[in-house]
Length: 163
Image 1 (tube, one colour):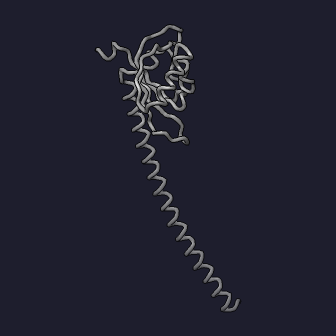
Image 2 (spheres, one colour):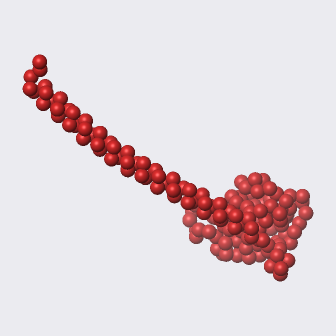
Image 3 (cartoon, helix red, strand yellow):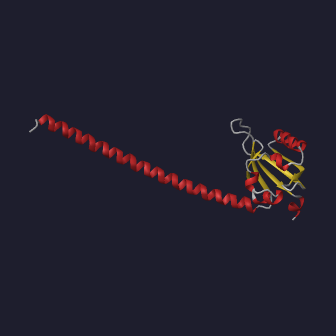
C-alpha cells in the first residue's frame, strides 16, 4: 500500500480535475448561449435583408448601389430598364450604362461635387439602344477613404414620375 502522502496527492489531483471540469462546463454553457444568440441575430438579419430586397425589387424606380463606381447591387427595375440581368451588372463598372465616356466622366465629377446630385442623361441598354432618364446619386457614407465612395443610384424615366 502507498503512503498517506500519495493518497493526499491523488485527492488534490482529483479536486483539481473536478474544479477544472466545472470551469470547462461553465465556459461551454457560455459558448453555447453566445452561439445561440449569434444564430438568432443572423436569422433576424437574414429576414431583414430579404424584406429589404423585396421592397427594393417592388419599387418602380431603378436602384443600384455602387462602390467606387462599380455596381454592387441592382434591383429588378434596373434589369427592366437596362436589359441586363442583375448578375451581369454586379461587379461591372457603371460605365456600361452610359452612352459615352464623356457622360460617364461628367457623372463622376458631379458625384464628387455633392453627396446628393441629380442630372439627366441617356441610359445605354444592353442592346445598345438609349433611354433618356433622370439619375439621382446619394452618397451612403460621408467621405471615408477606407470605405471608398458608396452611392445609392436611383434611375427613373419621366413617365415613371408622372404616373
